[in-house]
Structure formats: structure tokens, C-alpha cells
Length: 292
Length: 118
Image 1 (spheres, rainbow over the protein chains, first blue to last red):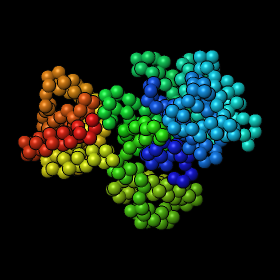
Image 2 (image 1 turned 135 degrees about the vertical axis):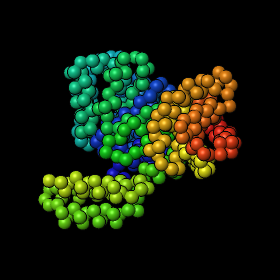
Image 3 (image 1 turned 30 degrees about the vertical axis):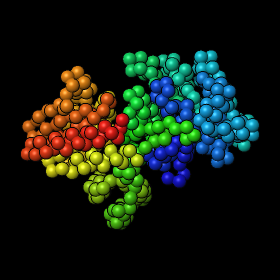
Image 4 (image 1 turned 90 degrees about the horizontal axis):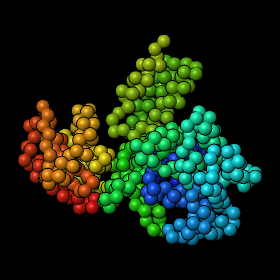
């Protein structure tokens, strides 16, 4: 869990399985006013406060508006980070950017490795996904995401469109490494503002609907019950079962198959969160792998 | 934390003999909290059906000002209790359960849930 990139959103990392994986593109989507920009700013500030470089690409708010937004939340340190160039804000009007160009990636990449940001935020990417009708345009977005992965760990916000709007079909959720969905039903009740993790590739994450608050000074705060957290945390209760299984693998399988299965069992052991014993799963693995 | 309080209320209700599941649904069918004390497989199919009923049930409850809506199956009974403007508590019981007692307890839980989430 320690090698994960912390999101800076209070209460989110434990249910994300520790945070984001390094070199990934992570989407935050939801309708207007659900807290997407706040999410992006929290992600930025968490890194900035720890000496990281951050690039914030804004397709809506100007630099001045972003600074004001931060100050309204009580995050006055934003000014300092802009002055010492730890934070770079690139503002472009989304309406003017018709296609994802290599120029944008170049701007994000910076002049050299030393000036490169470890965290990139794009808020929001919505305009650029409006017209993704052709194969080439979708390919361009896919390449753009790949480029981002090579540069940093990115957070991209995306405006959720109504389900009846066919523009939503171009929402590139499938291209992202993780997707977090923010909602606000508007009844003013505890479960109106919620967060749901749609996916977080390669990570055991929470599958519930979690209530969120947007608090002055803190930003987004996610609440999960002890039981929900227990469902995500791995435990070592059945370690002896895995040790026995590994012994069997070593005695019955050889070469690359042995190595690969030992590795899989180790991953399974490190991620076993269930209350029940892993006997049945282990039995199935051994049975299948021993078959000629 | 509020979510832990909510969890505790549902756990207590699900511990009553005869209760097969307690599920708190949001009006869009999202499961907020769920407690299934016994065999989960038995309930999963029913949960899918319940998810599809939530919107309809909440509408009916509001329109007709109902305290609860009951559905009976061969071996199980499902009762929906409105717990707030945007949530409904579903309680699944087995055929032989002491339904009046469970209903009384469920109404108590529903009121506590309402206090926590509103």
C-alpha cells in the first residue's frame, strides 16, 4: 500500500486500496456542482504540500478563479506554490480546443525532467470528449492518456451528461485506470452526496456507496464504516493455507508454471480480505494447474 | 461516525431470529448498507428484484401515504419501510418468522435510521 499515490481526499485512500497507482490516469466524473474541481485541487495540494511539482490544466476556470476557489476553501498556500513555480496552471478555453493535440502533452511534459510535474490535473476534459465520433479521435484520446501515464499520475475530471444524451456514449471511462463517480441527489440528506468507485485497476477497492461532505478548510471528506473498511483490508488469518498450497505447487509443478503460480498465490495471500477460508479457491487453482 | 451508527442499527435488526436480510436502499436503487446474517446466495436474486422495485415503492408510499409495502413469496416476505425522502429500508424475513415482532423492531430501526440520515 505504501507505493500508492495518495489522493489527498480525506477518507478516500483506504477505500481505493491505498490510493492511485503510479503512472496512471484517473477519472473523477459527475454532474455540475458535485465537487470535481475540489477533488482535483485537493489532489494537487496534497502533492504540493509534500514538495511535489504539479501541473493543473484548466479548461474552464482561469488562474485567478482557481486561486480564488482555493482561498475560499481556506487553502491560501496556493499563492506560494504559484510564486515558487512548484505549481503551474495552464488555462485554455475548452471551446477553443477542438482536438487533443501533442502540443498539450508537450506543455504538460515541460522543458526537461527536472521541471516535470509528478501530479497532473485536467479539469475538465469534457469539451474534448464531445466530438469523439471517429476511430481516429478516440485513438488520439487513447494516445493522450498513454502520454499522460508516461509523465505522471493524472487526475482528470469529466462532466457527467444526462443518460438520454448520446454524447455520453463518448465518455472515455473505459480508457482510465480508475473511475470515481460523485453524485448529489439534492434532498439534503446524508446519502445524497455520495462517492462510488467504479473501478481501480489492479487494486482491491471498496464497492459501496459512500457519503461525502464538502467541508471548509478540508474539502471532500468521505465516510466509510468500520465494517466497510474491514471488507477491503487484507488479513493474514489464513496464511498457513497459502504456505501449504505453495509447498504443493513446489512439489508438483516445475519451471515457469511453478514460478507463475507461486507468484499468483502470493498476490492472493496479500489481498485476501474475506472471512471465509481460501481452501476452495486454492483447491481450484491447484486442480486446474496440475491438469495436463 | 454516522455510517457506523447506521451499520449498528441494521446489524441489530438483522440479528433478530427470522430476519434474512436488512437493506437500506437509496431511491435510485443504490444499496447504501446491507446486512445478510446467513446464506447470501439465497438473497442475491431477491436483491436484484428489490432494486428494481425501490423507485416504484417509494412513489407508492408517497402517493398513498403508506407506512410500509409488503410483498410475499413462497418462503420469504419483503417489507419496505420509508426511512426518509430518499431512502427505504427493506427487511426480508423467512416464512416462519415472528412477523409482528419483527415489524415492531423494523419500525423502531426505520425511525433511528431517519434520525441518522436526515
